[in-house]
Image (cartoon, rainbow, N blue to C red; front, top):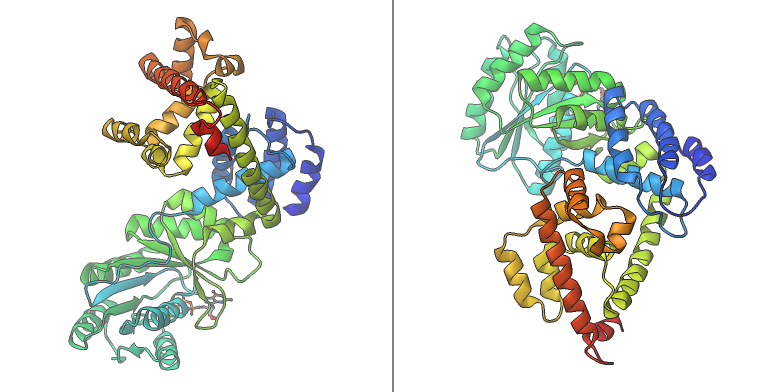
Length: 441
Ligand code: GDP
Ligand code: MG
């Protein structure tokens, strides 16, 4: 991807805002690259569309090229998709003995991952874990788990010939209760492909075990197949998370993106080898970097943005002190507020605004409202932003409609703008030692 993109991006050297054309050219390549990284077509398409909306019209940070900027936008959007809710790598293993059901196709890495996870819970969380193999079709599979258990110092349920998976699950539950285990893990049998027998067996086990976590273990190198497997298992069994194995291979990790976009389930861990400690918490940043292969550019743009933000803030302060405070300034202010932990947080920090922060809080302001206000400003033309006095009835209607809101919402925003600019003027007039000037030092 790096080569492909840098070719295109070198051509995008013009500074200023990202034009439609810049973004389109770059994103065409991004789309191809995503497909090459094994991201499914509909997911890649949807993803590119989102990025396009975000990127078009965005100002290009000084000292980076538009192409580099697009990479950063793509990178951030990747992370957004990859990030699941909740702490990555966390498992619901309170209320002992907590059952964890491991499901997936044969050869996906279930048995290995069962042992890796057991070791992790034992070493990190000091949990007492019991592992049980439910793979009655292949006696060697039961042996495999027992051997791994000995190797990592985790107990396995003694093997009893002739039991069904459901019987083994029940025995594991009883044993885990009696033996004072915190967690018991059920390593189910897999098939080469999804079939009814496999699914009904896993379903029966799920019903007796009532697992706290049902983890699907899939081979990350199988790309699209992994996603289909996940969809099927989730529809039939209901999974709580995914473990992607063989991420030590040269696959580009695109399966992770499709997996998240299609199933919406969190990817909790990645397998990075055959060894027992080759299991890591899933990190969206790492996978995003791997899909894009351009970590250095991302870091560069971040650095440049920080510098620019500081410069812009200073400029804005100067303009405000002169009583010039337009919609662009307000937009920047609102964006900053979101970053700094919402309006209350921000105002609480500004001198003399503690009271206003309280009012804002009482009025139920939150990030959602801030985002709506930003959308309203984005719906204005350049001229209107620079000169809010232009905003008359017909323009107001257009703007509100463009942002999917009511004129009354826009009126509120304008009122806020007026109040803020009045206040800025007052503060600016506080003589040489005025507050804003103080703050600028
Ligand atoms: P199961 O049939 O789903 O239980 O799969 P196994 O746990 O038996 O794993 C099948 C093979 O994949 C074994 O040889 C494992 O050592 C290997 N394997 C599992 N996880 C990983 C991984 O993350 N990376 C690599 N390179 N190999 C793995
Ligand atoms: Mg197995």
